[in-house]
Length: 395
Image (cartoon, rainbow, N blue to C red; front, side, top):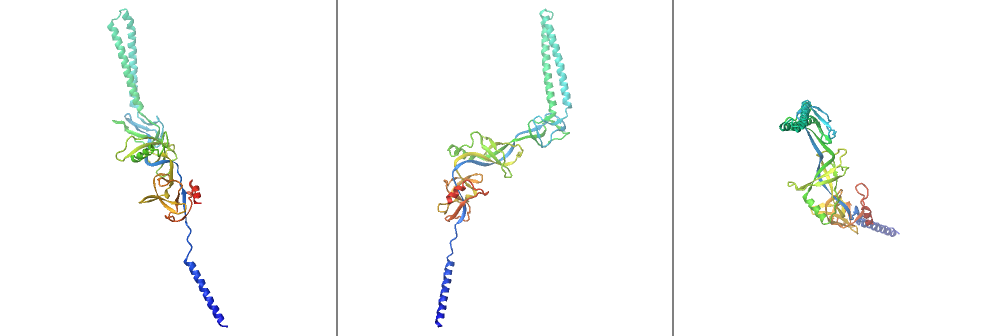
């Protein structure tokens, strides 16, 4: 009877050991982890306006340095410094007493010359019938005609002197030659100006519109011209190129401008070509001398492929992107991306369209690894235009 319990105990021990071994085998072979999730977009060729971002400086479209055109003492400054002035608006008043006296003297000389001319004309008028009646000699008549002509010349001289005196008197009232914004006054009341030279008194600048002078490498200009000639690009505009600005603080300027002209020569010291663009500036936001970045529309590519900048991996060997194949395995693809379009790189070679490009999750997406691609939602949480295609490909 005792052998039965001993056999039962041994069997129970063997069974327990079997269970422990089974558990140990399961612990030694864990399940494989799921594929890593990455965000992708599906690229597709599309028409794209290519732009180049170039450095530039703002300049006033018109600049007038107001100078004293006659000598005298400044009596009054009329304008408000830093304010807007109109063409012809009075800025300074110079003491006009001396100039008024000269004008009055010239006016009196004109009156005297007019009287002399009238007397000479009457004399000629009287002598003419007397000459016909031989009451006066031919010599006397000729002298009267000559005196008339001299009186007419004297009157013309007097009128010219009066005009000159009037100009000098007018210069005592200094006006603005153009409309714009005036800076600080360079002279004060009581200052002697115009003595031997045209003294600078103030500067007026037209700020609306405002000019932006930008420079572009002659090498880049040649590449653009070659691409247009070969038909790789089309002109961005038939009449004028559209230009946008980014100000010093990194903000986009709300008003678009237009390219006026490109210089006809290359700067030998910098190898760059200067260009001028014109921008509306109704609020005087842009001031002369500001540093800006100008985005110049230079051509249109009918089948351009662009990808977010973070999708392009830069390395000493060159640029590349990570492609998720049909089997959801990652492939590294070399590309050429030299131009940018806002937050995107324009890929000129390496992609044909339809590829799924990894945008987020690079640390999980190594070449050869299997991943779980999901549509990229974009930087602001909104899916870009290529996201629906990416989702369809992922399925």
